[in-house]
Length: 115
Length: 412
Image 1 (cartoon, helix red, strand yellow):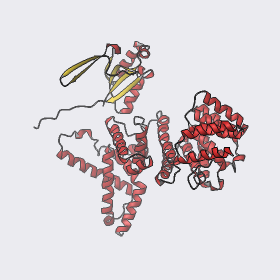
Image 2 (spheres, chains in turn purple, green; image 1 turned 30 degrees about the vertical axis):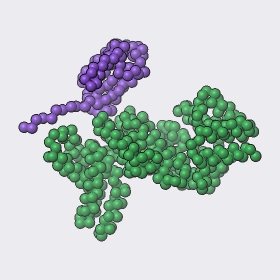
Image 3 (spheres, rainbow over the protein chains, first blue to last red; image 1 turned 45 degrees about the vertical axis):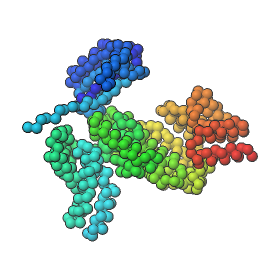
Image 4 (cartoon, rainbow over the protein chains, first blue to last red; image 1 turned 180 degrees about the horizontal axis):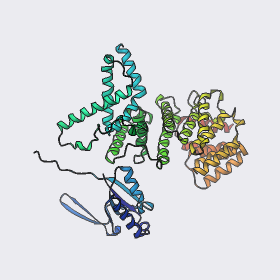
């Protein structure tokens, strides 16, 4: 089952983590077959929030909410169950200084047309 | 067998086996709600068939088998009417053969307890789920016990089960490495339930009393299934607390302090059982905070009266407890014990140190304790101030009455 691991943290704390360490973690996840996709994000000041209400586009500068810890990256992983997903998240370097939200992916399937 | 005798037998089997049947059905069917339906179907079938065919040699195995097949029936019927449902997502009930030894080596009740207390669920959800699925309490009973509405409780349970299903919390006993932490969570839930039942001193609700009994029953099950020293320690602690139930409140529900309790009312059997468990826990040398708290309770239980209590030993135990689990409340309790060993002034110094550090300022018991110590030390005006502070923080009527009485005594 797929889980999305959203990496949150205070940017200064996360920046203190060595890139080499994060790359090593990523490589290990790929090697073990758990890692599907992952990306680091540019800092939160580069964020833009988009909403469309009643056909009207609204674009605001910044993240969707001002929070103490900001979203800084993600890993999409394949795991047997929540326990395994938790273990994978715990092995990610940002877990030591920030928070990782682990959310199961909802598979959306279109109904098959009747034969 | 008469119909009445069969019904009585089925009732008896329900009381002794239904939780275990339920726990196994969850493993076989992979779903809480399916297991609950299957359980009811199985017992309904028992009422129909046992008068005719006799009571089976192993009622539990019969009920599991029947429940399982009824559940398969249901799923097949639903699949026929709902071809768009992704039936492949539902665990194939035939895939988990209950007769395969590997799967059933660990008691399914353990799997159930650890799943209900999974850290991925909120503490409120853990408590509600454990009481409902492991202890078999109804939603209404749980709601009444926690002074919540049944709909709030029901929602909590529904959401918890949804999380287990949607996030795929596995139905497992934790591995050896994970066991200590996971057991901690379970013990915390059990102790929470116990304290809910323990502190409800008003005679208004018998169901609150039963919570303590449920917690003890749960702990017994854990000790039986796991034999872990801290589970023994917690059971010992709860038994020792319970042993004082008859002595710790007046008929009107007012609290009686430990040093003023009529010790002839203490339940000696509970004390004996608790002490024996404690010895087993301590001899393992893997004991923890619950065992230490039990040891402190045991020192009290051994003493004929307050004066002959071995306060030095209690202080020593608090020293160890503080090293294991530093906390201001434990520090406070230690200060009270120090006062008994060395006099009120010594205890007061420790309490004042706590408060000076900004700890426990809004905790009513620290002010109540300070008041008692000042009173004993002859510092009457300070005592009065602390009693009044405690009164502003007190939520329960019986406690309020106690503090007001103490204040009134100071006026004379």
